[in-house]
Image 1 (cartoon, rainbow, N blue to C red):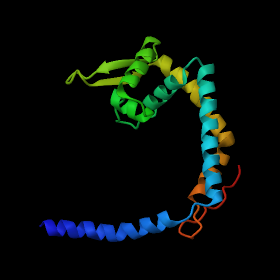
Image 2: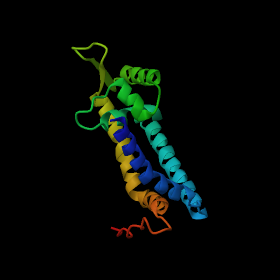
Image 3: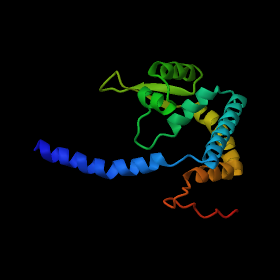
Image 4: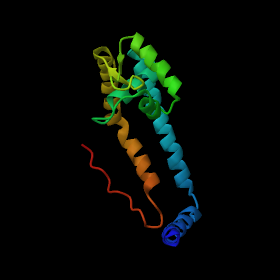
Length: 174
């Protein structure tokens, strides 16, 4: 029985290893370096402007990010401290402190699970929803105005020289 499992692993290795080696042996081109640098630049601009917009609406950037993480969860996904910490890529205790500050300002509320009091869900209150909507409206508007450059940069990175990936057709301007 163990032999069959090992054969399966060997089959997977025979499939993946050559493809991995081919991919890893490709030389990174100057245009790929430029595209990656441009992507990082575009993302940093977008984030910096988002921070400025949040501040202009009276929210600290991390508060805005937390409100967005809560509101942006999929239907049925619970806004637990752990989930929110994961979404913001921060430690659990940092998420707790951030939620504390938002709760003091009346933006969110904690609800304890009746069956398991250790489980806490964070819900967005009307005040938090309004503050978030102001920032998001501005962010979406900016992204619609400047997003083409970001998309072109990502497409340049995804394009491959060896023909395995083909560039997408140019988008039509509205």
